[in-house]
Image 1 (cartoon, rainbow, N blue to C red):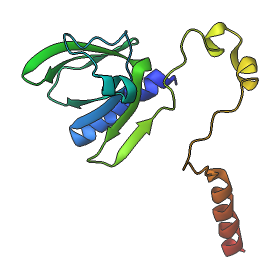
Image 2: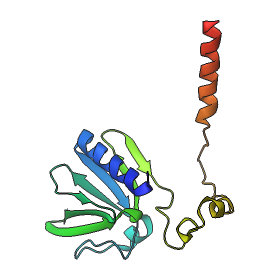
Image 3: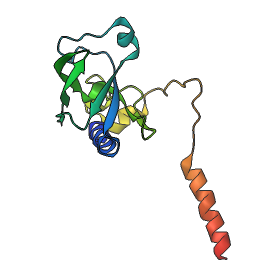
Image 4: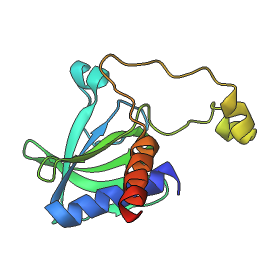
Length: 151
C-alpha cells in the first residue's frame, strides 16, 4: 500500500467515524485553493483544513478535491496527496502524521534504484522529545509470560 492510499483510507475512515476530519497541508505551488492564498505564517507552519461528511469530496491518485469555505466565500480546491502532512480527528483523538510528506521526483526511490539506494541514505535527524518504542520487544515479553502461565 502506498503512502497516498494509506492517507486516503485513514481520511475516509475518520470521516465516517467522526463526521469531520482535519488535515494539515504544507505550502506548495501545486495546491489550488481558489483565490485563497497562504499567509506568511501558513507558509512556514502549514494550513489546517476541515472536511465534513456533508461535503462532496473526491480523492484520486493525484490528491483530494472539494469545495471549501474561507470566510463566506466558497472555493473549489485541490490538494495533492504529497502535500498532506497530517490527518487527524480531535473528536476521536487519532492522528496520522508524516515526517516530510511523500517522496518527490528527486528522491532515491523514484530514481528507480529502489531499496538499495534508500539503505545508503544518512539517518534521519532526531527531534527533541521523540521516544523510540520497540513494540516487538514488548510483544515478546507478553508471549514469554503466556508460555510460563501455560507451563
